Length: 131
Image 1 (cartoon, rainbow, N blue to C red):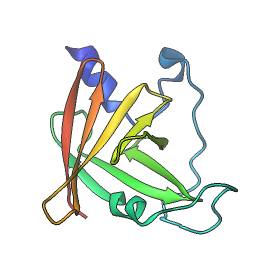
Image 2: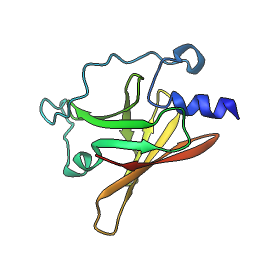
Image 3: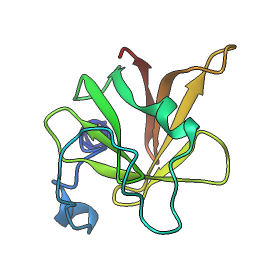
């Protein structure tokens, strides 16, 4: 069970690069920017919906922050490095390849993003958007 929580605390971090076999990605800031998108990449309005701070329950970290930089979506747990969230074919679904984790955003009846689900092979945790 402890392994499960360790996995979750490292959700948006590559600090466990040796354990997961991934290389850390350099952090270049957490400001949301929709300019300077790489060729062939554009930031759609729904990406902006995900940006914010989420309070996560039952994890070793309390908050996760979602940002956009250079047209890409990133997630970062408190005190950890950030990792890119890669969109899947289903709306509001993302993969974090560096950690083999999925992130699913939750919308309310008014189509506003209100939370997220973080899914690993060992279970899941939820977070509510607070900012």
